[in-house]
Image (cartoon, rainbow, N blue to C red; front, side, top):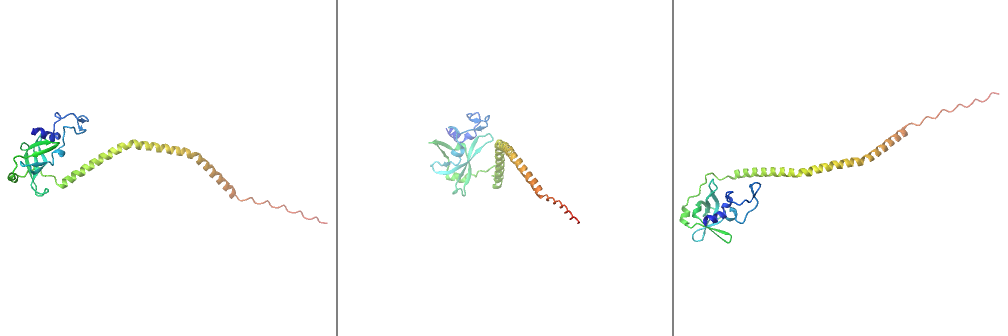
Length: 221
């Protein structure tokens, strides 16, 4: 029963392809949606309060301890402290926990828990140091860069048909405007040419008048 409940609540994220229903697309790569018999650890397990044998809360589940074969062997539980101040993180074997589900709510109990035992339990030691804020910031920067590049490339690809259509329409509009303007341009050119010719004629000096013929001399008596 314990294995069944825990498997429904947490191991769906780590189940093998053979045990899962084929709810994937693109050749078994992507999962479209959550099914009725699948749960997300973040919704039903991570953050769940762990109670002692007296029903009082002794801590909360903060992480899962998973082998390289994708088998959950335990949890990391935060216990003690106040609003996470001075809290100690301890590792708890999966077999030591009791899981019960009622009304869609998962209840986790550590039956063997005592105050003395929790105080004496060693703090859980990580094999690798926790990522620093700088490391996480670098990873976030790389993630944002990759997502931005992907989004930009996708936007460019989607915009290509519209861009080509706009270029085609702009070329057509230019040709239409060019054809429509040609007659007016020719008329304007003729008008300008006529005005230039008229101005040239007007600028020519008037011909000098012909000299008057001399009057005949009077006859001598």
